[in-house]
Length: 133
Image 1 (cartoon, rainbow, N blue to C red):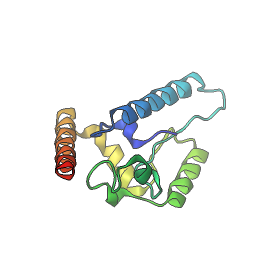
Image 2: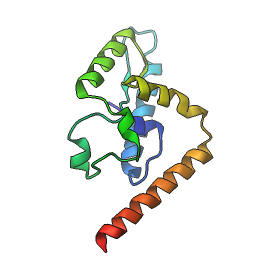
Image 3: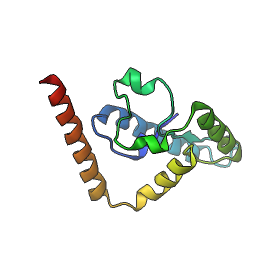
Image 4: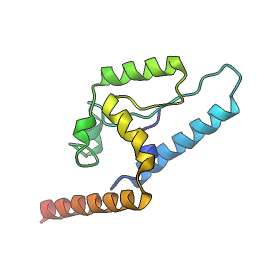
């Protein structure tokens, strides 16, 4: 089970994204290793899913601003994952809008993405500093 974080950088989530990048590389390597064996290897890489995850992680409202438009229910997530796994889809991004975003992401210049992540991190730090004051 991966995450869209395995395909991105996220503010205040370096260890989490690193662990999901590992899942991405591991799954991709395993899929290549098992090619033509009849064994299907897929990575489910969901984005925001309605669950207690954000609350438990202390990031209520999501890790990155604006992600609410991509939030799906756990049922939608599971349904998409099972359907795509049965088709043998290598990487599964559940949710129509989220899937489109993730497929477009490689077209965005890395420098632009890094700048957006840095800007979001500055906002998060600013909010944390105001709460602490």
